[in-house]
Length: 407
Image (cartoon, rainbow, N blue to C red; front, side):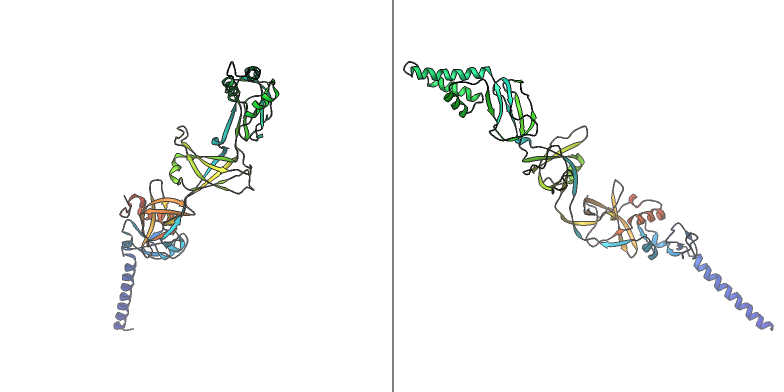
């Protein structure tokens, strides 16, 4: 090889080396590019290659596209591995549902207390057990009362005097009427007074009848007990209707409409279908010790299967309303605020604060912060949050875009 050929070869080698070095510098010295792994984002390299952890090909990322502090751009590989999917928000339907624990109680508006009109001794009780049903007009108890017996004798005596003397000397009509009214006021019926006149003799005891029908819920006396005037003998309740009284925390009162339908379930009677009722009373006072309120639903119980004291579950459902809604998992909450991730460009996302409302059927109401047509991340929002914190070093909830919030 002559000197000229040797010079040409050396020149070509120098030129080739210079081109390769220039190319390597172009790939390694570009300050706008770094390489990371979509599976292990903590891996950051200045040149292409394989991930030292999972041995996948590293992905080039342009730093200039990550400078916006409230936006995050992902590669297609990261989108796939993170299962990040989006959907366009549109009007939907939702309704709230609240489940409360309740107890069945007697309808206090349909209870009756039978009291003694006059003092005396209970000689006989015709119904003695709690739970016994007393028909209206049935014999309830026999009472021995000296005062009542004297009044019956006085009434018979006035009648005998009128019969013997007539009304020529004394007008006995007012006396008879007064004696009769006294017997009626002390609890005797017209039929009993008529029977007294027919027999002409007063028995030692007087039978009293039930003024209403119902089930015994309290037996206040026993046979042989003495009762005073006005003393309760028995307390009855009409169990054809019952109250389902549910406990609700004060914070839950705002979660349902008082006009909403209430569905009552009976765990002790699995064969009985749920009963629908209406909320007819909300206690205006709150228990200061436990911050619990009471709501009441009146239930029909014509088949008498329901018993006071049974447990029940009350489901209160508001009617569905047309709203903007998202899947619940699309909304990230930290106790102080709620945010979603909105796609601003292809594979580029921005966090946005939203005001949420009621939840139901896996959906959550978006009251403000989004508009119909916004593209929102519905799966993988937590991964976006973690990626943002890793890249930026802070949570996106620290600086929210509140331009779309209603104040």
